Image 1 (cartoon, rainbow, N blue to C red):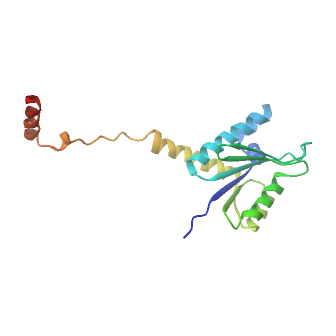
Image 2: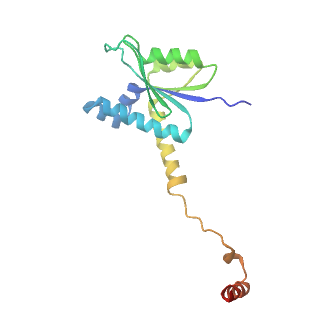
Image 3: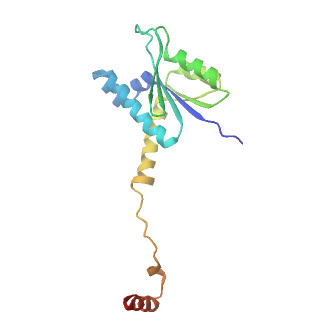
Length: 173
């Protein structure tokens, strides 16, 4: 069995508008909401060890060319003028579905249907949020709140009489 890399492709604005905390943040400052989403996904990526691509629409702007930004191992794509995030995602899935396990995070029903028909799997914004919250709980439980393990030493295993004799020998030298 060969190992196949896993990619999570995230429709950035769809997720921002679906998560209450990010939606509220976006009402005040869209850039802050994008940064917060990227930070959340970077933490998730680090824990899961998967590749993540976040796609933001720029089709309503005058940006002539697609642009890319890397945040560690996370790739952020800003689409070009007249290109939607959905279009980019569909093309990326078409070009890569044979090479990778691909999940697409969006709550757009039509987009979910299209990526499923092209061989990727889908995850809704709500499901992604739950998955991320569960991974944070697991990180806390396993790594941060890890129960203190008593270190077993030789002293704990030796007969007290032998331990006393060894202590006497140690003091003689």
